[in-house]
Image (cartoon, rainbow, N blue to C red; front, side, top):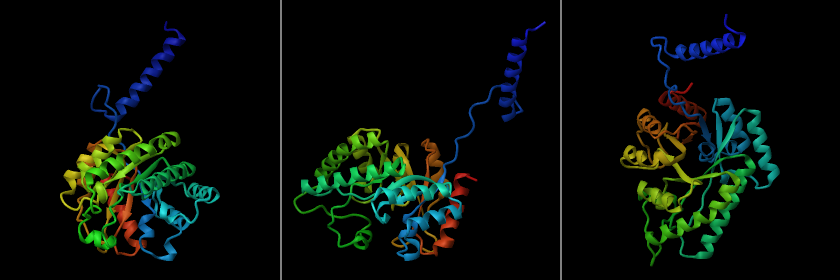
Length: 314
């Protein structure tokens, strides 16, 4: 007669086998792990801030709307903070908790494209302070940029030239790559201490091309500087370029343009982007940056539905 221990062991094995076979009743062979988990989808508060509508600019209001619309979390735009006081930051964290929202991203600006060492140092100090604020908010991922040369008249002028601008007279992009790598390296100890991963965005300045983004990331050579992969910031041949940086992504920005874009409109194939993101092995947050002219109350929920369909989320 089998002992009690043998009976229990056999029952446990049968239960495990049953769970495995339930996944695929057509075969008795153990099954491989299930398909890759689809990304959670969050709302970048930039989506509301960019409307310049006083009723939409409060981060508290943004958190309320994100919860109402069914997002999983919110990426906070640093420029939107009404205060850097810790009490205010903790109130935002509590507001997110009330809605069951993650605070997963912190979107910041800095520029290292200046020949003035004092200005570069000021931007390093700014970035360090932003990392510490992300830590206070419980945010593990922070969008960073190389910045721009500042030789364009304004952002509209920069967009009119497709994000291309000349260096400051007497200087070159080659110098700027060295400055930028050095400045990010100075930020790494704080990022590591706080557990905040910086993600260099494919944006303007030195991040306008995948080669530029990867040159900086590989030059810094730290797991605390990765890539914020933005679907809408490569204006030509986006899929090939996104595929180059997606394997390094710590965050993915999803752009939508319902009602026509503010500066430009890209006719993005979202299922195609979803496929290349999955191929790169990314299963982190997908952060919606809505840049359409349609009213936010309809354009943003419509964008969420589009992304859910493309990425196969609920």
